[in-house]
Length: 124
View 1 (cartoon, rainbow, N blue to C red):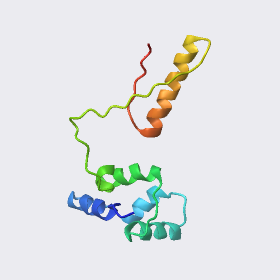
View 2 (view 1 turned 60 degrees about the vertical axis):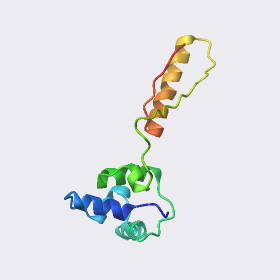
View 3 (view 1 turned 90 degrees about the vertical axis):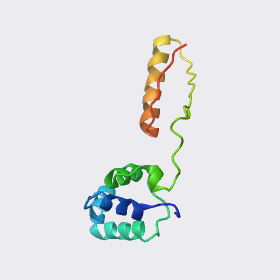
């Protein structure tokens, strides 16, 4: 992964005065793994040998080092003044309207949790 900037994130945290150890990060990412497995993970993460990264690790790494995913993956942040809203339409076939609303709300909540986005349910 050419644009995975974990070393820069580590440097950024040090510049902010944080004294974080790589072993603490690997413990956060793989809490139930052996020490050898954690050392191997650290070696791969910081030795530019990482082939993939678990989605769940991204937020943990960003929080640990105090950076966002844009920084971590060297992505130019989107223009905050532009509108980047996504509309998702759900069509649910139910006999009872209240059941449809409840089901749509449950799906909306799942989407928010899965993609870490804010949504709202519009009933028409």
